[in-house]
Amino acid sequence: MRWENLSAPPDEGHPDGSAPATPPLPLALPGAVARTFDAPGFAGMTFYEVQAKSIINKVPGASRVPFQWTINPYRGCSHACVYCFARNTHTYLDLDAGADFDRKVIVKVNAGELVRRELAAPRWRGAHIAMGTNVDCYQRAEGRYRLMPPIIEALRDFANPFSILTKGTLILRDLPLLRQAAEVTRVSVSYSVGFVDEALWRTVEPGTPSPRRRLDAVRALTEAGFEVGVLMAPILPGLSDTDESIEATVSAVAAAGAASVTPMALHLRPGAREWYAHWLAREFPHLVPRYRELYRSGAHAPQAYQRELTARVRIAARRHGLHRGERGDNRRLRAPEAPPAAEQLSLL
Image (cartoon, rainbow, N blue to C red):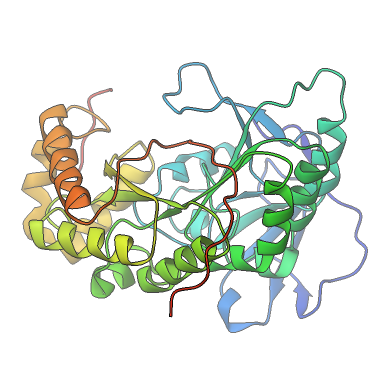
């Protein structure tokens, strides 16, 4: 059980605006403290507060990501992106990868103190740590639980390099801490903006800030001196892979002052695959045959499709003065400028 290192936190009263929750606890979290909140933004959601025993996680060797260590203060995500690849991790908790992933969020309430303790351990060698690579560390719950400030403070105090990938605009709250950290170590900030179509955003990423708000945050971070990369992901076949969508998105990314744009086609791992297929059949049934063809062999679209998509984004990026960045790239804070006047799977 991947969650056997978690336990319940001591109950020290309820955070402001919370009320004790009564739903049964997941079998994998027998002692967690469950809470609900009265605020409209948390309607229908339950938060399971746990005391983690470890927080800096080593990425499995078989993974294709360009980093080895991660910090994930939350599990589950109110962003409710229908394609989220992390959905299947909720099944390790005896929760489902669909609605439970969106509405039942595990909160590691001792994350900050754990990060500080683990960074101080003699065995830790100061490797780069990636955040926001599983679920978003700046999802809505972060506004209430405030787990990220002590995490960033610990990374700053130990001059440990780190990166953050997010769709959340709440990162701007922590901009002073990010600037402090960037004075002593390498800090990378990236945003995920797969498309700028607001109608599509409302149905496929209903719990996230709008693409325009995310690009406003890119602009603010850029003006603060950070070189912000945009991960143009995921690009959705039949929905955001047209020339018009790519042009509109790359143009908006460039106008926001991003340093780079890196495209990534949708991939559908188990858990996400089933949830996305259900959504697609409901919202865009005419696209089901195309998806069956593209994803008939597994989680990833064919290499030919991915290469063609990347080439089209790259051409648009050149046209708008953007160079191609690499995911996971770390960049030091630059001096701020004056603000401008697989396995065989079934899709359905």
